[in-house]
Length: 180
Image 1: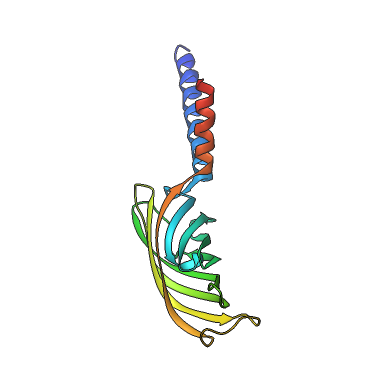
Image 2: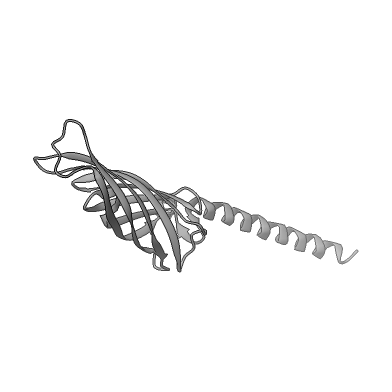
């Protein structure tokens, strides 16, 4: 009977620590996949931003990412598919599919549809390094003068990105306000 009290106390502490661990797992799943924050802002050449610009990426799953870009002469949307789940401090192969609308100054408007194969490195310092290359089909809009014939080109995309989390920023802000 003397062991019953300490046993109940031990059971209470164990269940509390398991509940805390589950809560942390749920919070972590809101902000990251495989130790990689879900959001990235990138500086890029090529890709969804036209010739050069910035893009905002959002991981939808461990293997799928959506990319919105805007920049010099264009803007667009794309998706990246990773055959293996993203992971911090790892190089991952990927396939990208994107569509970009471009406007040459005082000239034509055209669309580029791109399929690229490449790699992304997710560093431990919240940085991404991305390179891909592949075919892209360019076609002009009907009301636009043709600068070149509608045809396939070999295109590439290079990015350097910074990963972040809106959720953790909001949580940090509320913690700072609670301190005051």
